[in-house]
Image 1: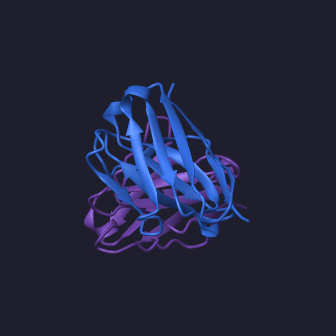
Image 2 (image 1 turned 90 degrees about the vertical axis):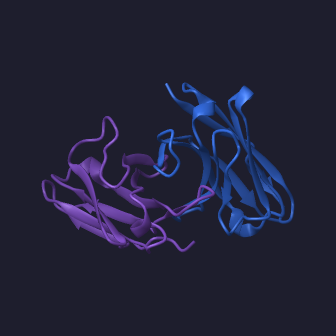
Length: 111
Length: 121
C-alpha cells in the first residue's frame, strides 16, 4: 500500500490551466477505472471533485476534468480562479477488502 | 442533507484504546459502504479502513491491521472504529466518509468534520 505519487506543488495565473499527475501501479491506478480527486482547503474536510477517472459530481464546475493513461491519472483545472487555490489529492481503489490508496497531495497556488 | 458527525477523539496514552463513532443522517445508511480516513497534522490523507453496507467486506490499511476494528450498526445509522494499542503515529484527525455510489471503489462523496486523536504520554 504505497501512496500514489503526486508533485508537491503546481501553480498558474488566473485564467490559465494547471494539470496535476498521479502515478500509481497496475495494482491500483492502472488496474481500475476508480480514480477520484479531492480538493481540500485549509481547515476543511476534503471535497470530491472527480470520480471514476473523469466524472464530476453535481455542483463541481466543468473547469475540473480528469483522465487516465496506464498507471498515471491526471486532474486538469482550466480557467484557474482564486478559489481553486487548495491542496488536491488523488485516490484509487486498489482491490478487494475495500482497499484504497491516496496520493501524496499537491498544493495548487494561483499566482 | 447528508451529515456525518464524528465523536470520541481525545488525548490518550500510547498503548491505550479509544473508540470513535460516526453518526450518519440524510441518506439510507445501509445502502452504502463507509470508511475512516485520517490526516496527521500537516500531512496528507491516509485511508484507514472501510466496511461494506452489510459488514460482509472489511478492509484495513497495513498500518492499522490487527490493532483497529471497524464496525457499523445499521439500525443506529452509526459507524465505529475501535482503536487498540495506539501509537504516537496514530495521532491524526479522523474523518468518517461515505462511499459515493452503491458500488465499492468509486470514492467518497461526503465527509464529516473529523475528530482529533492525540496519542501522547
